[in-house]
Structure formats: structure tokens, C-alpha cells
Image 1 (cartoon, helix red, strand yellow):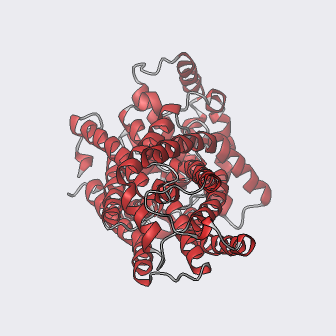
Image 2 (cartoon, one colour; image 1 turned 90 degrees about the vertical axis):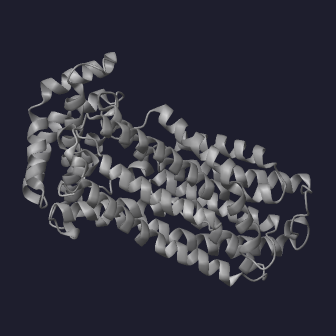
Length: 472
């Protein structure tokens, strides 16, 4: 449908603007769900007032986003095929962006309206998989070749294992706490409008801080890659290439030369396209030097850069995708796999980055979303998981374990869900405390988690197929 419009047409520009707005709204809905888990215990136990908790959580989210880098952001983005990430001839990836944001936003807002702690990570991942599958069908490729299942399985493994670890480890920590402390304020549900004793209040603020920081290192990154794709579509001359990766940019020609034999030997069903891209980069040394010089001098609006930089970005992704494939081929030798991994790392530097203002914008939207929509999720975590209300000890145990799991995953580039880990952790502490669990609510949460992926996959696949298909 949208292929009928020129890349520079007003309707495409308007839709890119809407996509930018949608990704910011999605990040705010991430705050409804995921960031609300970080502030649930301090708000529910009256350790901090809601405004104080949200502002403090937002600050620690921001610090976490800055410290955590962008590994998680691009671990998700790389689920998409290279021609979807950067369409040929500099065309903006509007169908992909619309399909992802509409489907993820729909499910995030729907589950929040029912007060069910849902994973924004699952929403985005499901939408990305749906786009990749629809793209394979449109190009008559098999789903095994057209979808990067290894990358998807790597992402899903972390999402599947982390809630189980959260349940077991948080329950175990709470059990140890009960054995050591035995009795006291840690095990008493919070009284109406009464803050806990000073040392307990400090403990809860500390665990809130650790979860917020860890959330920033992981969940806070997840929309950054999508924000980048949107602004690259709006302003490709300015954002298609990383202005801080001048040296890797000038070395692309020699990297492409080294990549060609690997692509010829181990390339998949689109290796001819990758070979063309590698050959173009191989011959582009003068152009790369020119682009590096302009990036250094900030001459980013030079005439002709819009198409040139977008095309360079597309060629890089085509070659990088094949280097990932070489690393997965069984017949490739260890030396060849190492060479492919090195080329993958070096060639990704000019295209995988995020300016400081993008990270700040992501953290700001998380904080705003938490402030607007925290109440529903906080009440569910505090009152609807167990047959008795959550105690400070349970909240502290769940958040402490959650911060360790989320932070570890963030620095290793593995996406996990703050919602799933903290919710499972609180459920684990309630099971360990012998309070019993509210089966009905847990079943609703579990069913929501199970259907999130197929629902968002189906929605995004249908939207992308309709918008990208020239016959509509």
C-alpha cells in the first residue's frame, strides 16, 4: 500500500512523524507496566510519596540507560531482516514502524487497562517477529531463511528463564530472611498512610533504586533502537551514520573485501544481494572518506547525503547479516567464525549507536508513563497476587533479586522483562511465606503472558503485509 508513495512525499513524512510519536507513547506505556514494578514497594508501603518515587526512579532509569549502553536495543532490532531495517533506495521503513508500534501499543494499553502486569518486551519482540515473518512471505522466502530464529531464541530464552529464577530466588531469599529475623516490621503488611520505621524505609528505597537502575540498563534500552529507526527515516542525512565512528567508517572498504570470500562460501539464500552490497562498499572508499570528513565537520545536510548515507547504511546491514549467518554455519571453521565475528563487530559500529538526547528522551518517557499509570499495576502487585497484602520484606526480597537478574542481563545484552521478574519474585515470596496465592489473578497474568507473543505477532504481520504489499 505505502510503496505507491515516494519516500520524500508529504504522506510518508507525516507517517514518520506519527511513528515517532507512537514510539514515545509506547515508551510511556512501558512505564505503566515495567517501571511501575520498580516503585511498587516504596509506594505501597508509604516509604516514599508517589511523586518522589517516580522522580527518583526516573533519575535512576536515566543513569541506567547511560551506563548500560545500547546492546539490548540492537539485540532486538537485529531480529528484523536488513532490507526491512533499511529499505533500498533510501526509502523510509514506514510499514515496519507502523506495524510494530500499533500492535505493541494496542496490547500494552489493553493489559494495563485491566491492571495486568504485562511485558513490554514481549510486545515489541512479538511485533518484530511478525514483521520478519510477513517480510519473508512477501519475498517468497521460507520462514527458516527469512526469520533469524537463532537471534529470536536467544532473546526468548532469557525471557522464559528469568521469571522462574525470580520466583525461586526471591522466595528463597525471603525464606532465609524469615529464619534470620524471625519477626518484626519486615513481615507486617503496611498500615494505612503510615511509613515504616527508618531502617526499613531505607532498605525499601535502596531496593527501589537498584531495580530502577537495572531497569534502565535493560528495559530502558528497548525503545532506543526503534527511536533511532524512526529518526533515521525522518532525517537520514543526519542520523544514518554514527558521527563518533569515523575510523570504522573509513575502514568499511577493507572489511567488505575480507567479508566477500566468507559470503561466497557460506552465504544464505540472499547472498547475491549481500555480495552486491559488499562490492559497493569495496568500491566506495572515496565516498566513505568524504562522508567521514563531512561527519567530522558536522556538514550533515550536504546535498545528496540523504540517499547516499541511507544506501551505505543498507549495504552495511546486508553484509553484517551475512556475517551473523557465517557465525551460525556448522561447516565454518573456528578461524572463519572468529573472522566473521570480528567483521560483524567492526562493521556494526557506524550504524549501531544512539545520541545522548535519544537516551534522555527514552528515560523521560519512562518516567512520565510511570507517573501517569502506576496505580493499577502497584495495586495488583501489592494486593492481588497473594491472599494477604504484600509485606515490606517480600517487596524488598523480590526487588533485590530482580535488580541482580535484570542488571546482569542488561550488561550482557540479553533482553529480559522487569515485569515478569518482579511479579514472579513477589509471587515466590508469598508462596515461601505460606500466605497462599490468588489463583485467579495468577492464571489471568499467566494467560496474558502466553498470548502476548502470538497476538502481537499476528497483528504486526497483518499490518506489515497490507502496508508493504503493492497490490493493496
